[in-house]
Image (cartoon, rainbow, N blue to C red):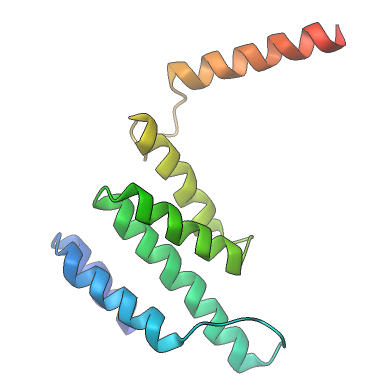
Length: 127
């Protein structure tokens, strides 16, 4: 937890390089984990990796390193497909890459048009 608090402090100060270094060090210190058992220690290390990968992806998204953000979100989701933070981060990343506000919950014109065409296609196939 102290690591994440320090990362949040760096991010608030927009010192993204320091935050990125700290997260990468935390990931490296945790080692590469592959889950072959369910020991409590392994579960803690594994969970920590998911959190750090997702946080690093958030940082990359914030500093507009979209390719890196995608890589780290994928890594977090490969470790835990149910990671809500990584899933939400992927949605924000997609919005950012489309040029919309990543924190907006409103649908863009493109989203509305896409949904409209999906409904139209659905009616033609099943109507």
